[in-house]
Length: 519
Image (cartoon, rainbow, N blue to C red):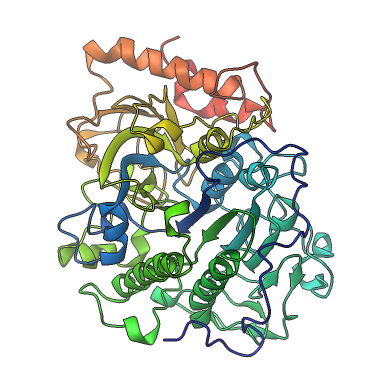
């Protein structure tokens, strides 16, 4: 398929303006020096891709992702990386801000396509630190952390789509944006370029069910669901091509719409995997990686471009994971649970860093959160983030650059329902009795109620089968971790520094069992 072949109204017309100045932050008068030769950075964020969907990470995978595997073979593979949440919106908020999303008003769940902005004006984003360091910044794909359509405060039916979109990517550090407001299965079904809707909606998209799940809602004539992911790929390739002639390095954030529902692999990928449409869609993602790496080579940018490939959370159970498991494919690999769950399968994600020929398939087992991207790139750039921003972001730049050991003191992840887990080294404490999401808690009803909390030693129990919460010899460790979780909550930060305020009070935590545990 020619990825530039797009339907009327979505064609790649003109330039994506790699060297333009739109609404991004002004560069600092004297930008701090960047590491090396100011490397370009491409961050590919997949949507609901499982750790076990990558064949280099899962030797038994029935999906052969040869191009992503190539990234692994000449990159750095991080094996213990976690989204801050097992749901999309809070995970993306944390990537963009270096802050846990539960510090905002969003305590559980995800937002819709019409939702107002979750990132307030004045909050430093990862795009800001690149822009202020002299980079061109772009976002191509799915935003899903809220923005403001004109007149939305008077109801979704009253939106004036001819007016500028406010508080979106171009007012949060990105000089260029092309994409959609929320997930591909939620209205409004319109493309947004910079701060304008490309085509005003004039019809109603009918609902779809099953693997092609979509909610009914307003849609533009140019919005064809099957073309959205190919369109993102085409725009990405075009942007990289144009940046080859720019005198500025670039930061490109590509939050793609796949393999999230609707699962719509293009015709040339249909039937190519051994596990059905989901596997076919993953192969289309793999082909996107091929196109990105090839255009970098063709334009002479490969050696000076860092490519990061990861996912916003684990694979979703509702895309027929049981059937795939019966065929021998396990999207969560050896880990328990799926998207929305507090177990590892919900938030442990693939994470690969490639930088030309600098690496050679190194494996790193450091404990890392996707919130750490901001501090990591700030260290690379020599940029000082204000002390009251990126309050949950720890740099792992030394691990990328030289393989130096990096010790994260703790890591918090949340489930779809907003329940917490707290990691210290290989110990994991979960502050609820079940999955905290859609997954089966796997308790035996005949044995009575489950313990209110869970403790697992992931060093020998990565599938989280044996709950050690009542183990007498572990009570001191459990109390230590409980106190650590409480400190992360009430101090408004997990990084060193003066205490900060969460956006909303912590009264909502009083119903959680850990608050009085061990008191």
